[in-house]
Amino acid sequence: MTIALDAHYTIGKLHLYCEDYVCHGWKPFPHLILADGCSASPDSDVGARLLTLNARRLLPRFALTAAGEAGQAAPHWRLGRQIVRRAARQARELGLRPEALDATLLIAWCDGATVYAHLYGDGCIAVRRVAGAMSVVQIEYAENAPYYLSYLLDPERWAFYREAIGDPATAQSVRYLGETGESTRREHFAAPTVFSFDLATFPVVAVATDGLASFMNVDTGERGAVLDVARTLLDFHDPNDDFVKLRLHEVLIEYGRQRLFNLDDLGLGVFVRTN
Image (tube, rainbow, N blue to C red; front, side):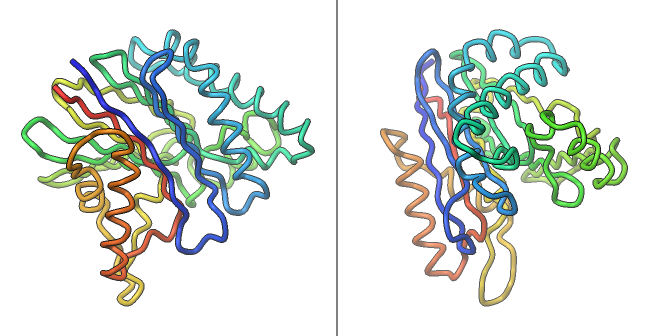
């Protein structure tokens, strides 16, 4: 089978500058990488870029080690540590504080038949089945506090995070939203957030930062339903070059007319099976 892929990011309505960053490419294999910096941490826009670019550099090692049997706690976190440690060395050389690396990281790649996704922190995955039904997986954390890779660099910050989120065993929320309903399961905050999707069953697989869930009508205060937003964004006319960028711009213009805006930055990357 053949695939198309693209990614893009845009600033949130309430932000002065964008703290999301994305990259995508075909070598060594098709991949999408997204990061979302923390607004409360200075220079996290730079940290998001450092994490993304280091993840791309380590992608061959990551895919070789991380794809395979379910669970994958050891390789998932070992490779996450490699990414953040490399980024931390570069941040120090730039004179940045460790908090600059407070950013979520989403890594997805395709081996030609299956899309694999590893998430470090919150975010969303949206998929469309062959028959057209949409589903969204939304990953959130207690106290709206994602588990950043940067916490692995400092035992004191790690311990403070563990205490601040309440019960560690249920701090990660994995919410499944579909056409027929929704369900939620609770996980330990450090449980590896790992998914895989067969393109024969799911010809459209998208990964997004949590800005996907930030759309709001600024006149009524009503939130845009994540599933509806995903369905609209993934309604591509033709998955050619820049198809995500073009569709995202179209949707934002139309939503703007409806007074519906993404309050948070939004990064979006999509794999599409084309035959």
